[in-house]
Length: 620
Image 1 (spheres, rainbow, N blue to C red):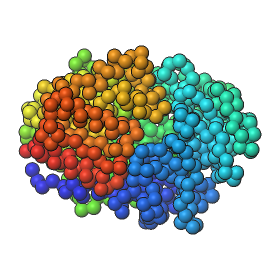
Image 2 (image 1 turned 120 degrees about the vertical axis):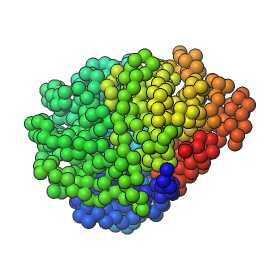
Image 3 (image 1 turned 120 degrees about the horizontal axis):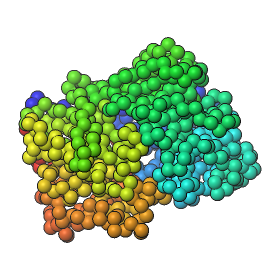
């Protein structure tokens, strides 16, 4: 095996996140970590030149997007302390270089949209316990609550006049349900006076549930048409996600995609084009439709592509829209796509430092059978090492999926000689509603059989070292790593759990209200199903663990609190009789949250992985 890529170089590759076009089109605001940490920067769309404008005042984790004020004088972004996601909304003033708080709350605040005239900010907050919508009037300096649902509200956006909003909520009995609503803000009480006007189903009873789907299916809204007479909606009633145009005058939906694979619309171009995404196996091409909803082109057929922003924040004055594309061996360039000419230009190329991109390993899409005969798709990175140790990498969510994107952590592992198998187990998205919802009420069940079956499938390859098999995951993937080690102890030779879950009842008690709703949806009521919640908690079975374990966790994680790791560590010592530093390693990652884009943090995580794998699970 050739000398590995220095982990510091790979972890330090700078990344550009959340690019947004200024209203005049002269600048693109983004987060960029070329300085070593996440900073607010401005990019010249003509030259690609980048200028840093903040100096440590933005979060280390680039999780949440940024937005421009419509006058182009300020950029709004989310700020928290140490990654705890208890966000406030701040503004960077381009004229004065001043950074100031705009919306401050005790809890999580997520900016949803800025009104076209710039006067109002629409944001979601759990200040009232559940995640609901609020509006901030910048002129009056006043806030008013817009919705008052018992379950979380999300995906909100103003119409072109800022008199209406569209959003997603659920008032039906079925927790798997999602509906699209349109509410008239102008009728919601004394809006100009800033008074709260809240009804049980939205703004003063004016919220209108659109007739998109029947109960038990999940609808979404992605954009308004330029005239404000229709909205782009998605729905999974045909199993796979489809998108259509909902006419607000007739209450009828014209479905555009055929529902044979997951497809969704990003936005409506000012000239009437619709930019959509489509999941096709492990690839995600961008799809362009004309004004008559005829499919025109797939400008990026390889890997995964997407649109940055929406019809306002993602659009350059000449009609080009910001886009991105990545493959397993190529990082994402910042692109501008012209739907009229079907042409793409590169605004800013991705950076590789001193690393030769030819060193990166391509991926194959494979399928295998689970224990009950269910076909499971997976992405396989073959390191070329013979015999090869294997790491089964489990994605988070659980409602997420793995496809042909560049993943620096995977390339780090493959470069060091480990073949990586990343399964899309039951619960993963992009394989239809039934496949996605199969995990509901069954965490620790069939999806874990899918993961274990993948390990057995790859271990049977003649070029694999079946005695060097590890499981690694973060978030729900961390839960899976713990679960695999305690329930399939004879299968694994090592495990790595990063910000993972070990105690489901404890997780529920510490979760924010909107996360509790998700947990109820996926595992039922924690009191009515108490036995299931305890039985499917890895900590319940800690005595059964055999393989060495590395535990990594940030102390400010609000999604999977650090108590999940600390309690499992204590149980390993007190109930299993293990000693830290011998049978297992335990690392707290300092003042970090559920993840971090901070480069020092990434270097530390890579180093911890390398040290553990080299000592406990050495590659050839």
